[in-house]
Image (cartoon, rainbow, N blue to C red):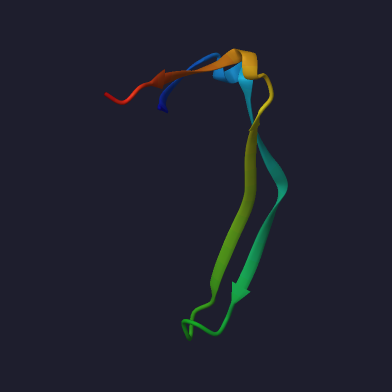
Length: 61
């Protein structure tokens, strides 16, 4: 009863978005005498057209 395979036009059916800003955290305490920088960026995605993507259902035997 699972859906192991998805097929279709993923370019038309799924949208990946990313935020414009990148957050940078400066950590001067962890690795003396060096300074570490940590960068993070937010990304996400969602189905925008469910008709463009179909799932294949497989029944367990």
